[in-house]
Image (cartoon, rainbow, N blue to C red):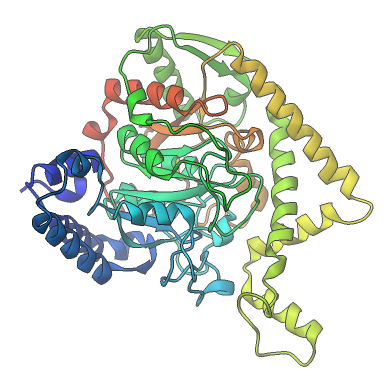
Length: 496
């Protein structure tokens, strides 16, 4: 029998609709796969496999007994398909730790809006996935729980902060997953793990129930095996939410209708600043091959300039750290989170709870954020960064007057070795140079694999669109994916 765990969600759905397999078959296949490979990958923080099996049996039983169900309703439903959820999304009755000692025993009393939407579809949660602590990092080495490994090479990082989500999808431990993206945290791990990751337009997907890192930058999005699954999961999670004041109220769109092979006349801009110094030669070569492929497919490709991009990284780290400092102030040992046993007064309770509960990277960003917000430095740093943010937005708007899509690398390199950058925070921050400007501008971007480097590690291509133009980037990504057939040629080898 075909390996169920290798199938995409749309392939699983087709087999479910034809009654070739049951939901129980799917969950059992993933349970066996997790029991076999999770010890190598370490993608999960919390597993909910027994509960998942029970839900699958109930769904199968309901489908068999409910003969009156309209056939069209069944075809629209994703009941019985499993998923993995990043551990900064609240799940009622299941631990939500943010990979931090600060929240190691926190069980959320409610579901995040995106989780509610999954539950409504009867999509089955297999567990909560590892991440950098409070989503701060680019490698998933900052987790207080585990260091997740890249299934293509277990000595390399899977990217971050949604490294557990990306590694689980790439290793076939889940068919798809939810991640969050503050400065590249969906796209970079998708690139490093050879899968598809989409950062939606800010406000398209509700942030209610997402534990905040930087509220004006955070966005929930899909991590999937292919572009069709990406569009499908976006259909499920997108939409206005009254509980999120930043959620945008717009007409519902079926993103799967945008998936066409024809991209003749599509105007693609290639910003030269993203291909300069620091970009690995293999990454550059694969992106140049992708550009040639788009030309062959009938797209109009031109070099352009996003000269404000060089300031985006500095502006991002000022804004993100300032918002993190503010958001994480609530974790004080009294209102939320871990409480120290070692204190004699209130000051010591605050200080020791936060010192013991937060890891080094989180502390670093809180200190930096508090500094840039402090009296005397606010105007020089935070206000200036917000002004740069406006210029970045305007620069993107100017480019989208000329181009439908912008094409860049996702990261300057392919996945790097575990431990190789963790002692040098500045070098780690530079890994985000191709992704942070997208979050600052609030526009959507997708990462799709476009080949492998000389070591056999995946190379990711980033396609950026204007606000709420997810259909354009999904179509451009789908057409390219159908042309190069990456999944048919390559798969992770779990090298050690």
